[in-house]
Image 1 (cartoon, rainbow, N blue to C red):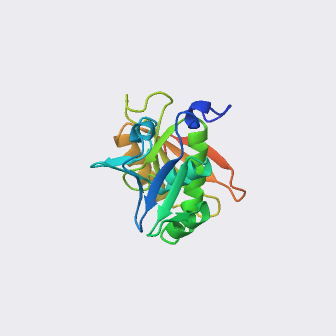
Image 2: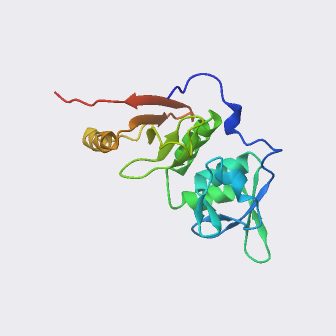
Image 3: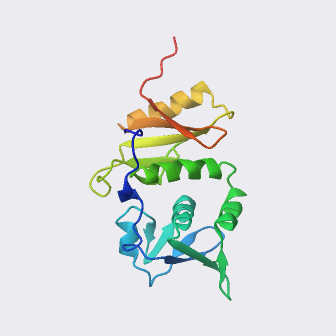
Length: 191
């Protein structure tokens, strides 16, 4: 995973390929309206199909909203929901939402397909460029914030889990200025 270098434009949805998508906001999820062209989103690794509905993660919704590609509505009569409102509503349930969003945005901007993580401590799964839908995620991302420590035992446990899945673990450390530094963790030995 080469996180240095220029940003890949393939990660940024092109306005002529994805038009502004309309979605409904509920307390737990953001659901793309069924009349929208779901294929343009799913082919780029956005959302999870649940029946005939496409449900976006908060990070996906925030990213698409920040790019001007998503309009979110709530209630009847429909009221538009802003980026800040989405962030605030989900932030009440997850204090590290801003740091996780910064990591998601950075990885997407570099051309990677980023999906929600699974297992203990894993925030995201990251697919190599061009490999989404053709291969499994190669990298599992653990997001950390500068000044918020993690115990060495917790880190060792997460690394062991990641290695048992035959994946590479990447620490994404968000500093106080919102900049992200990536570290690949391959072996943790305490002697």
